[in-house]
Length: 342
Image (cartoon, rainbow, N blue to C red; front, side, top):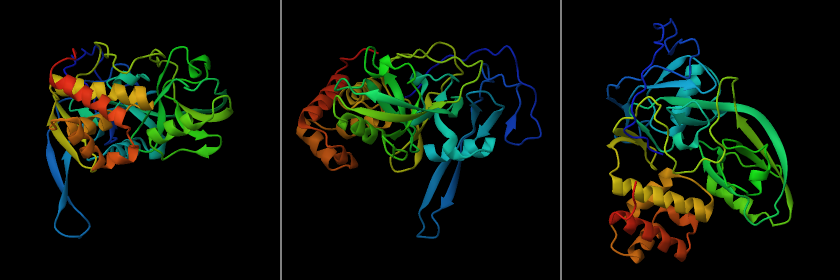
């Protein structure tokens, strides 16, 4: 979910100077207008691998500004190379357990899925962490084959609702909202499962049967607005924001992070199209997975080579059908030839 080339918002209320707290400075909980993060200095910190050989893991030492979405002082977060490590750093900064974080948004404190943190962060992005709020259980009659949910996950074991299709079974249940974390299905704990596993469990529930879903909604404050319920995956964020760097910190599948330039139009269009197919065919949203599929197919010359690359990767576990492989290949070739307009 990359955010690039956003204009910085002029802040009319500058924050007070640093307090004695080394992790944060107070801004009277003015989380609607946090200070614009300055461009960080890039360092590199080589960490040993526990004495097993001489290889090292290099972590980009970048400083990101962060707040809790329901209101908090601004903290400075650094020294992470994965989404889990990012959550751990945020939890340490604000002194609570890491598993209290449901997900993070970039440059918006709202439950806004168009600004959801995925597998990358722009170097000037401002991070907002959404904590667990009220739990709730809802009994649902699966009156149709499809429930109308798009599910994503936070990269640290929590699957949650990214989109609700208008007019669907779930849309008719006002207690279920975008941003709700799916914790249990018929008493079965799904914490730790990936989004596609949760989507498969929901799909496997027989049509006409009744099941119970336990959800945990993001913590809200009296001043926090919530994004429109029926936002679309490809919708563009508003003009307001704190800026996003052209360079991006990307979290890799191997657990490392790397600083890369932003994607060109063809690459980003292809990734977006692949993500749209994942949504349509599997009911999931995963920019990192879409990027991995693009990278596997971008240098291939035909769909057979692409299918072999999928089978030889860890994506084989998804069990993509031949028809779906063809759809993915079509998205890649269309993007290569500039058939998508951004």
